[in-house]
Image (tube, rainbow over all chains, first blue to last red; front, side, top):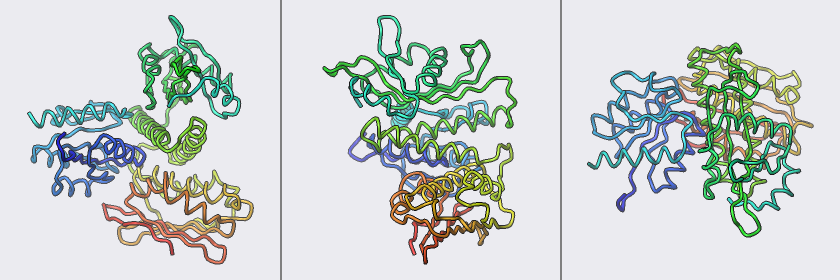
Length: 122
Length: 315
């Protein structure tokens, strides 16, 4: 990372998890955009905020997060999906998106974010 | 967090939770000591059966204090098949010279017989369980951050787990996307019958929330009931008299009244931080409360469709 901390957009509707991920990201020197517990707020932020990578729960209060994924893709911002389901539940056109399955460890989250930032820089 | 073996041995009899201390042998691990020996060691043995040695290598890493968990289909020790979950927060165990000789960890495990009849579909059951595990792991990590000693950790973590467990039990098992608000309140208040004494008014039209919002709402209610009912001047004199809800535009407003027995300082200290505020924030909600002539009055506002109530009010 450079002098300016990378900004990570977080969308997660499970409160304990959302705020623990937020704390972990801050501990690792990232700046957090969110966390957003619902699709409308996440979508607005994805369209308007400046951020380097998005960590998105697949289901937000009953809504699918894929509209946010589409916005990030259009802006060429890497996405990491977070879900309590396995990959077989993902629509086929999102099969290439990195996926973390809950429950997920801090090390796994940080590794995926570093990978995403590295691949975006290449 | 390094824990001295001698300190642990003094602490163990006082710990009201399954804790196991293990030491590293030449080829295997041995149980050094445990609190609640029958419960803890039987879980440990069942747990060992499902683990590979990599798990123990991670536990023995001196700098490792993050929660570890394992979810697996496995054969249990008694030969039956089971859906197995194990979870622990390890603390490195050191001798008098600070050399790491083993680990101590608290222990939670859920075993589910394969043949048991599940009220939810398989994928929904797994989804709920994985989300619950994620909540437990996040809560453990948060509690590790919030507390400075093993004893404090166990006390706070146990209390938080109790609230989370009760909250999840009060959300109906359903594959439906929406849950009736009345059912959430009825289930939560039924668990706190001594605080309502059967005289409360529960009123409101049919309203539904999604399952995740139901879990958040249930957690908030449990945390509120804990603070209202367990305080030094709580349930002896206080009675919840009114629990109602209504919809104003896109906002669900929940109104709560309790006559007497309110510890204002406790409400200020405990509800302005921790589980209650986290869940409220995740519901994009706000709340205001006051105590008037000995009666606690609170309104909780929960937004739908992304409307946001910024901050809380104390009137």
